[in-house]
Image (cartoon, rainbow, N blue to C red):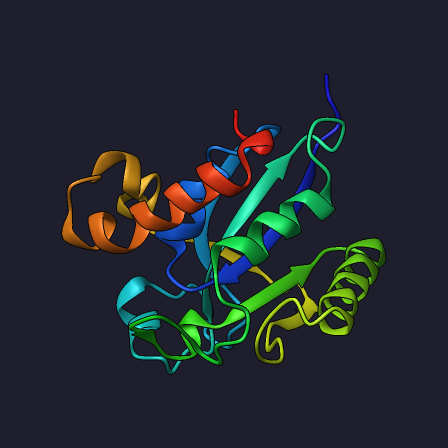
Length: 178
């Protein structure tokens, strides 16, 4: 059995992240959920108030012999704007913040080094505001949020927001596709 690892990313609406990471070679599971707040067992309604402190996020299970953590980070930084504070496009609030929740020191160090590399090379037009912190408890979102884009590709948010991010991934990171 292949060794698996876990990564947790927040970068706006979890439907966008989930749709992309479900197509990444070596990723065996993607769970949408909530992390980084102070309310135990939050639900979507509470998250939407912005008062729980949680971010919408995805928890990935991946095979590091197929896709590296660094490659997953590169996907993450490609499919959202890490320079927007507490928002992604029209989704505004702390629940839509850009964040990486590390699970061990090697992940923390890799993220720190990559963000420093991006800053030194001025990869982004503004400073990166992505939060980097140790992963607290991850709460899976309600069942109806799981695999949302696959189940609702014609829903308006999916058509206008999720689909373009998925297309960008498919075009720019084709080597990482399943």
